[in-house]
Length: 402
Image (tube, rainbow, N blue to C red; front, side, top):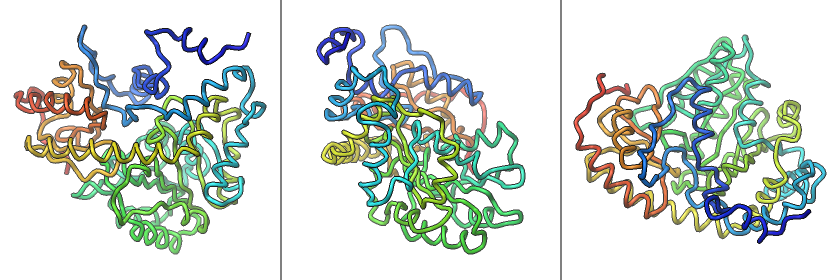
C-alpha cells in the first residue's frame, strides 16, 4: 500500500522524526564502522543523561533544505524501483548536473558520495608501478586504500600555515617514476585551508607538462563554504584539461550526508575510465529526488553559507580568546592548535556531551578538528572548550606537528 507523506511521518514517530538531522545521518554507526575499517578507536562514549552536540564529522547540522525533504517524501511510492527505473531516474540527475555546468552527461559520473568517486579513481590510476601522491593530513579515503593494498604512496606534510605544500607535491608527482594519481583536497580536510585559483592552475600546468599521464583529482567537497576571494572552482580547468577531474558531494552544504550522493566532472575521456568502475545502482531513488530538488534550491545554499560563515567567525574568535590557534578556515570546520593532545581534549569535552574530531597524525599531539554546528550548539560548545583547555594534560607525549 502506498505511504503518504503524513503517514510516513506518523510511522517515523516522535522518537525518530524525519528531520534534517535524521536525514543527514548524524549518528554513531557510520563513524564507528569507519573507525574499525581504519583501525582507529571509536569516539568517547556519551555519559548517560547528557545532551549531545555532534561536531566531529563536518556535517551540516540543519540537514537538507525543505525542497529536498519534500522531494524525498514524495518518492516513497517508488521505493521499490531501482534508480534507473524510477521517475526521476539517476540519468535525470546526471543530466541536471551536466546542464548546470553547460556540459554533456558524458562529462559526469555519479557516485555514492564522493567517496566512491575517490576509490574508483584509485582503482583506475594507481598501481604497483604508478604511485599515489597526497597531502598529510588530508581526507584519508585514498590514503587508506593505498595502504590497505600496499600501493606506492607519497604523503607530503602540509606547510606551516596548514595549507597543502604544492611545490613538494609537484616534485613527488613528476619524479621517477611519475605518479599515477595526485589527490588535491581544496579546501583541505582536516586543516580547512584553501589554495587560490592561480596556485591550482599553475600546479596542474606543471604536472601536466612534466607528466601528462598523471591524473589530478581535485576534491571540492567544501566548495560551497569558501569565502576566500582568491579561490575559484577547478571545474572549468577539469573540463578543458585531460587527466584532471573534480569531485563534488551533496554531503556538506546540501546537508545530505546520509543520502550518499556525489559526482565527478571532467573531460569525457577521463570520465569514461572512471565510469567503467562505477558500482551498479550506486545511488538511491531518494537521493536522486533530493539532489535534483537541491540543485534548484540555490537560496538554501546561500543561506547555509551565510549561517556557517557567521558561526565559524564566532567560534574562531572564542577559541582565539582562549589562547587556541585555529588555522584559516574555508570550510564548515576548524583545525585548531590547542596545545595538547587531541585525545585529552576530546575526552574532556565528551564528559559534557560535546563530541569533537578524531586524531589526525602527525598533529594529534597538538591539534583538534572541530566541526561547525548551529550557533546555539557552538555557543554551548565554546564554554565546554574553555573548561577543557584549563584541565591539566593527562596524556603523555610531546607536542607534535612538525
